[in-house]
Image (tube, rainbow, N blue to C red; front, side, top):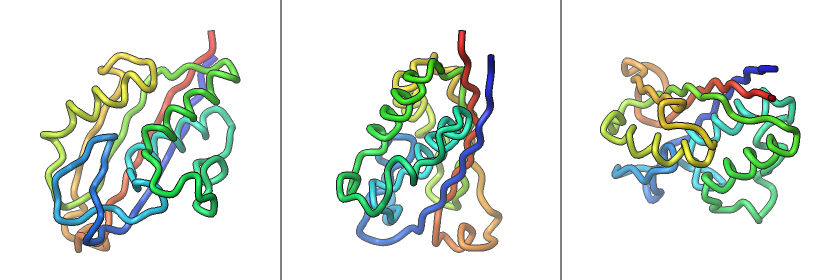
Length: 158
């Protein structure tokens, strides 16, 4: 049995915050604003996995009204999502992700992101695909005011 889920996340970029993407600290003069570490890529992956399993969304499991998740490392959120899937008998097949931001350039960081995410998901690195694109200087992303991510996940039961 297979299921597919889709995830999306967006965060504002601000001064004085670190930029975490795919579980990797990315050198940049601005970071994503959020209740946790605001890792849009991992949040989109969480939502894709939760959606595929019919388990709601990241806000349901890790609400920004709960101080337990304030400043949380999104790798821990992803680990919890994988645990929840396992309780229901699901395993991750693969994820395909797209980051959307003008700067910084992401491709040099993709190998580190894949090697960070794959063991959390319990998959080979080639089952974690990460792409990046700009918004061609249009909208909030184009003005470098924010960052967005899309993710698609395949989950399976034996």
